Length: 277
Length: 277
DNA sequence: CTAATAGTGTCTATTAGACAGTATGTT
DNA sequence: AACATACTGTCTAATAGACACTATTAG
Picture (cartoon, rainbow over the protein chains, first blue to last red):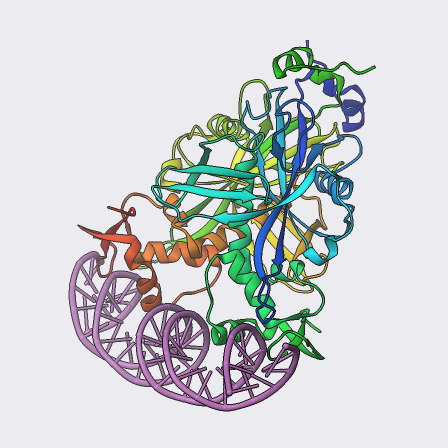
């Protein structure tokens, strides 16, 4: 027979969460950055690539596979975002970086141990802040996006030594014809982390156009050429200079600093213009 | 001393999930629809309102408060989306409706019972499909959006008998100046469901502009006037006819059906044009 | 001088906003 | 005929795309 409670206090005192099946959660982080590779010709600007942080697993499951940095949520102490921050601090020693919740992945068999639901986060960082440290098992991989064909997206991740090829199929959903489910064709990253990589990069691409998100990946001072390169690398296409400058001009402030010693015309350094400044 | 495993199978056989603190999850659903209210004047078109489904809680916690339909995830049997579908079927008897993951809410004290993380979903439905059934404790509430001032959003939900006023503060986040956290100023809905209502409506507003999402709330045949009204109600502003028709024209197909008996000029009925049709 | 990038002016094409007009059913 | 909505033509404003040109440094 069920007990009838008169007050919320009384009800809560008797409540036993353990009487129900519970589960574990993790926070996984897709840390995205844009790297500069120096180029032999002293006159040329450095080439930029989008890169993501991966960690080599040294435990089961998926031992020795690469995956995104992540960790189990402590349900008594922290939120998922705090958990993500903690993991990021542990792996990269960085704090105070951009974090945004991306998506919650919950396929029943995504973790072979037990039911684990994972909430993924996008983190963005200016590569210049990252010279210092890092877990020896963590490494940035450059991202190469291939032309999509037959609703299959191919992505290649490479750190100079190893290359990981991802292949993801877009499967049409119901009724309207512009919505997809994503399905791994190769489990080359641990868990379903290939889906996180794709979804995160797509989100970043979209947000470039209608937010100021890009400035989370820029140093305090930057040239418009550098900023444009970051856009081009993320959007994976060339932009026209005058159009780019028109679009960006209200978001930046010109400073009196300039670059020098680059083998070509120097460039004015700009800062991000915060709204209401 | 820690045991060293030689294979993933061996490791998994010994794995005990219960050795770690676990938690519960729920799926909560924001079911959005556009209702038609008949108007006294026989000549006039019916007035449209955006409405959301709420359920009156008949158990602790938050007994007798309104909340979004939701339910606990069974970690052994279902995904969060399947859980959302199950709940929706239970409350409205509807299946086969648009569902989209919105956001995962995980404030430590959002549920007074224990740690409960909630993944919220947007569901969309054409109100005409909804004449039938419904849990007697469930009811649609019309949504009225007030002008935002001082970064406070006020929303009023009303079902003709009861009115619920929500008030949510937007708190600026770090670095870039276009990102906010949302904070309830009134806990007039159970849990943090006011935040879900706001986030869901904002998401719907945005998606109207770059997806075909609206057709999930339309019947098979509709006039362009009705479609425009749905846009206007969701975006909360008037649109100009010629501009609207220009934008929508590639997404719809004219049929040879027409309306009649409306006290004014009849209108051509259109259908949604699926891509590659 | 040359290679390379920085930065600008201007023309054109496309898209969005605004308004005014015509069309056509019901009562 | 009058009302209310359906539907269209066209002008204007704003935005995006394209190209060509000038400017300026290190070596």
